[in-house]
Image 1: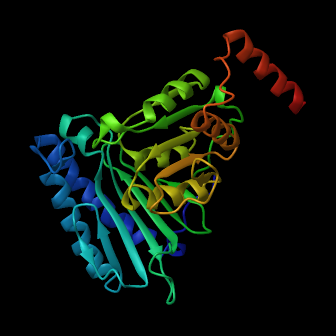
Image 2: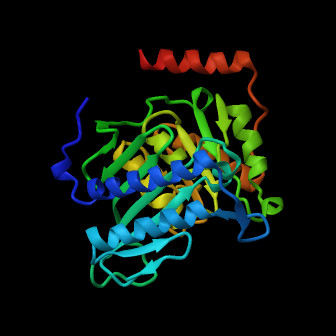
Length: 299
């Protein structure tokens, strides 16, 4: 399996060093415990979020002084720059605050050449996601592949939703208004299982490395998806909205898959949104028949 040539990753490798430092800081807070406070009715933030974002902003000003920074906790630096980092200093804050070991640092770099309209996306050219408790570092640059701890990664080869492990999330704010519980039920019964672990950036990284075949969620922010979206595509997967239209940083829908189950998931989304053609949940015998037919077709 190819290994990373650091000299070919001028953005991701320096950013990875920053993410590791921020991750070490988060780990130190995690081990001694932190107090969470509410920044909305149910949305929380901790001193670790703020300390991590402060560290990342300071390091980026030194390493990439011409780059802008857009951080979840309020950092806004040079947003008219040609390059802009989207920073989630602690994705999975609720997990972190409860001692649940599923969180990360996420850093995605957008290139916005001169003339890019204000309301248009640039191109995500680098992404870094670091899980400090597992010491797992995911990096990617556009056109150069995706890597986990220096080894190239690829999406899973699974071709059928019924054989796939997928993931989703529920927003902490306005949970009572989320329609996702209905989709969660349908996909749980039609797949090998749905995980809801509470850190979208990690979920996207896991699609990229083949631990998950798919992930969907409503109403994420650019700092949640910038790095992970590049990891998925560089690992051979695809990322769209639920109807298959192009994913944008401000999209209210994200559907990331290994590229093989995407059509099946999008078809189910279309039918559920329209309230049509939602067939009864297949029995175990019907699942087996489908699997056998798919295997026979490949021979």
